[in-house]
Length: 387
Image (cartoon, rainbow, N blue to C red; front, side, top):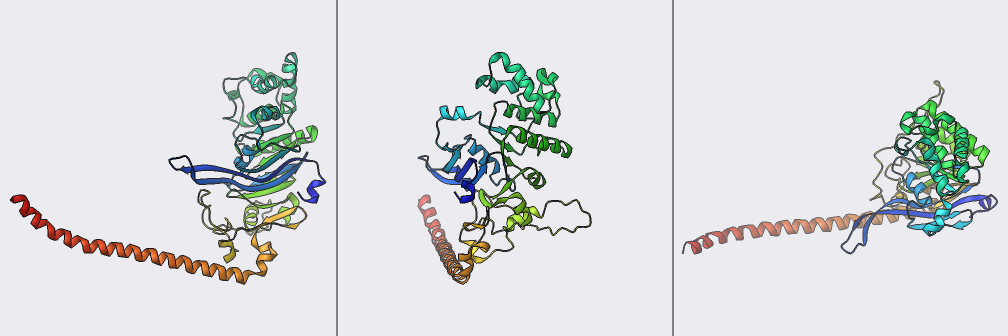
């Protein structure tokens, strides 16, 4: 942990977190191939602040949040919450922490049980975890509903009677009812209209100020992320690309992928011409990622070293880190050596391909030579059958 982080009241610290999903196993159950959904992610969040996690669909944002929540078991790294390592914590101990870490789901339509009333939905966890005495639950839930902008008469209504924005307020009330310190918001406004998005974002900020909440805000809407977050983590194919304070990252994005993402943010000025960066190709499969830097197949600044050497996460400024060879002094000083290494690797690859092609041709020619001999035997076999 660096010196700047040590001086803060850290509520959540993630170090080298990994989560792999097996996609191919042998007869004995041993994993042969894995999908690396989250691969070596590290960050720290100070109490009362918000970190935004951004990236394209499929980059591992949601998996990261669910792994922190222990809905998925981590395959590597550590998760430290309030100074306690909870990576391998037991179910009984984790149950006690469930009230401290909550999740707001992406889809307010499918995340609410349709056969339960609003009051029952919000009060369920309050009863299970004994947040307040039984005779105070109803009034306690009404107070939470009021904080989230829900009217008291909604208590006995069902989810299908509400709009998308009101349903998301119910989801927020359900999460806050158990008095959490950390809330993971998994794209909480992506399914809502723009005007409703603003209401929910303002509500989240207001609740953060009044209740001292800490957010891990997962989103692909950079305009929303800029408004609500204090720092931003950029992910691509399960890896960290860049991490920094929100203002610094928007003012000075360094990684080519971050630049491409931020160039897509619309600016409310019709006279301002945007220098939009269009990424070539599609995002590679996380089940078979490229060697070296995972972004090199789409990067316009790609160098030979990017094709085979994985970039280190280097600090380029106060609390600003980036995983790119362009900002690694050791790599940039020895580019010629890396170019020669890449040339040698290419020669070896071409030689192996030539050997494989020669073997294939040899097999085809041998098969062609054996075919006439087999045909010559057929008449003799026919005479034997007649006899």
